[in-house]
Length: 348
Image (cartoon, rainbow, N blue to C red; front, side, top):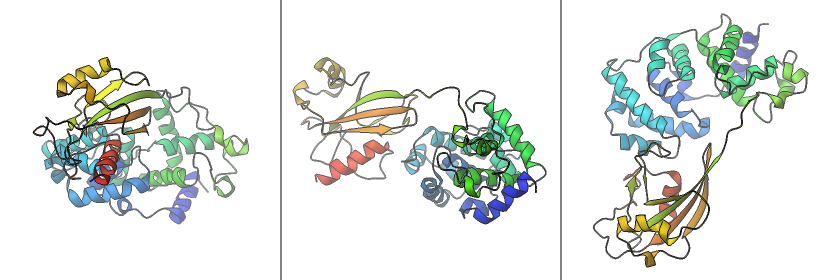
């Protein structure tokens, strides 16, 4: 039996039941694929359902205010995905009259759509013979082939895409692509693959050489950046505070946060560190408490944020303060949202 036939037999028996597997609507497939980038399926599922319910068509998503899209995305992280989602929806509305393009090259030209997403949409919605390559596919192929080609090499994508295409053969590209991704997600997992019941174990090089956990291989380690955020939480009666929009090209662009002092070390801010922010906010240095109200560590993919919340109760900012307690008011990063809910709600 061919490799693809074994894979499709496995998929027929073990595939999970998700709403996006019951449609070939390109809007739904595109939305699903964007949400599931860097997100576990079970976490992404309710977001997918809320987006479909709130914006049933790509035109309705395109017409929505960006802040509402960011708010709906809140908690998923990698917010550039949401901004690209909104911008691409507008391109599809304006350039393609609300209809998704049906060629691989045009799909690839859409912002936020890379080779993997274009291949998924193209194969599932338009029957294009394109092989998908994501983290699951890299892992399955490198283990089965015993291939040490590093997956972070700049030529890894075309290299492994060709391998996947060879194994696909003449099988249905949509079924094959979904099957190989599902196999990597459920069976050929990163740390505890189910090699004892694998349909490919007799021909899997990694299994036969007992080097399963050595694959896939990388040539570079990702460097983790440490950042130190000190937020000034202006608090008036546990009701109002001051929020500012992040506009720089950085994490959380377009979301709201408290006034921020970022340091390049873990040392406590000195009076000189605070001065520029205090001048901007017309605050007295004596109002800064001796220690933060709360300190947390928030991990992102390539960053660790050490976040400190310094609560100040000014008497002269009544007209400047905003109300953050309405959960629909502002899109907030998760650590900010958690602090607002914990501190402001628990102290009323």
